[in-house]
Length: 493
Image 1 (cartoon, rainbow, N blue to C red):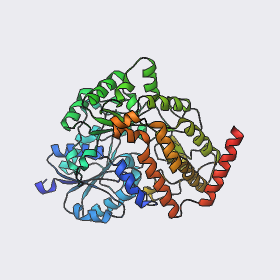
Image 2 (image 1 turned 135 degrees about the vertical axis):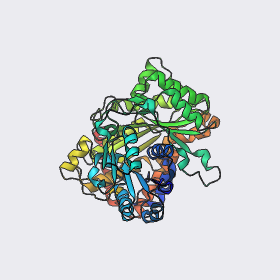
Image 3 (image 1 turned 120 degrees about the vertical axis):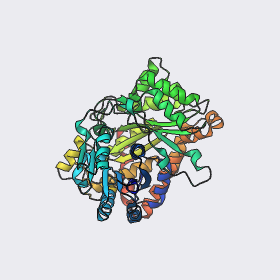
Image 4 (image 1 turned 45 degrees about the vertical axis):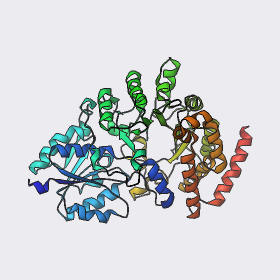
């Protein structure tokens, strides 16, 4: 292989895209953007083999602009999810036209390999177990069509490969890097096995944790300053054993690093009841270092326990909000709507009532989206209920499959209705008052803003206004739901 051929283009899809609300989607992108770690790990492996590398995002409506970069390299590595399948397919077609070698991995080819059959190579499952064989074959010019890690043991995180973050551009705005959220992986796997969750199927059963000294060493390598942000990309951080988690949190706190993470609340509540220190270590009430966002996938509030889960209980919501508020830790809920047992309009009303009583800092509403590889997703596909073919519409903001007990229009309008309930000016102000205290705001304004929920409330309020202006929100249906909810509340009281 000549030196000029050791050039690779690394591609990954956008983290957020919603063509229905292009203006406020810009705000969402700025809030949600984190550099993709999977493709950065690929870059580390390529660097060790002497490859020149360039990373670019695959942006909808701008795929054709990638052609000039494709022409300049010998290899194109694509990290693909279901969401970016259609975008990846366009890139693969373009690369094939120029006789380039394409290697695609991620959730897309793992659970839907036939959609990527035009690629030169498909990697299924975690890439680390097959990296060595893949690179040997690529360099010898004899790659296999499929490298299937789903049939191999899970990758041992003691051999974790640090991602190559140098491929990502710095912010062009003055001081923009000061607010950058540095993504980091602490563990893989989850003790819950929710029926609609695809990440747990990719990561397999069981929980794997990186060695804490290795995590700390990577943090030190980043040369973060006091007040910088780390974003844990973990599926469930609280699945990490409490002693190891305490060691990590203590280091972050002592260094004055702010972090965002995700997990279930039950282990933290149990740790507190048993005299543990995790929530105190997470709290940034009196200092800079601490947790500035804890996302809890409460998911389904219609059943007492989420299908397939171990510790996702509706009964924990109110207590969790109270405890997290006591420690000034912003608690965000992710709620799923449109599962097979959900009914219109009762599910929306019941969910709204439970969340109103809890009064968390932030609530993210997601439309149930079927993915191949999950028990629920497979059944929806098997029953022929998926009507959407454009994969970028699988964004959890619009229906892509027909629900069992409501129409797709009812699911969409019901979701818009419940977003309105928690993101109108009056509710935004009420949430801010409930979750904000003056002492925290005076000492740590950044934490105060995160506790208030104002940032996301403002974004979602503007989103509803934009969706209404573009004709997606049916005003007549919204008024009917408002009236029905008031009548429903009276019957309940």
